[in-house]
Image 1 (cartoon, rainbow, N blue to C red):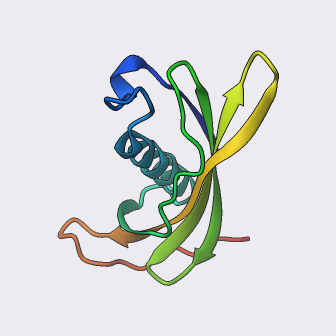
Image 2 (cartoon, rainbow, N blue to C red):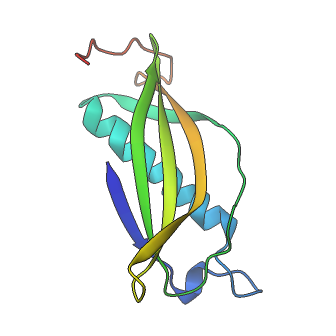
Length: 121
């Protein structure tokens, strides 16, 4: 699944670069949407995010493309690999600025872990 985000002034830190917390929020949201679409009707919460390393700085006006790919699926959890690309619309190029793996667990109405439904590959 892919998602896009335009970096606006309210997303910047006091140095004029994208605030890392905003990027983490968008990455988590993109992966959550992918999980919710792959497992319709299931409720998910984030339980882990692997390495958090910002590879490149991002400025205002940058268009970010976030790509989420389903990875390991367990009994109650599923993992997504998310890669974020910064697009240079003038040059028609993009570069990787961030990547991580996010793990979600399915929960019931009381917040207890719940088995994932069977999915065909």
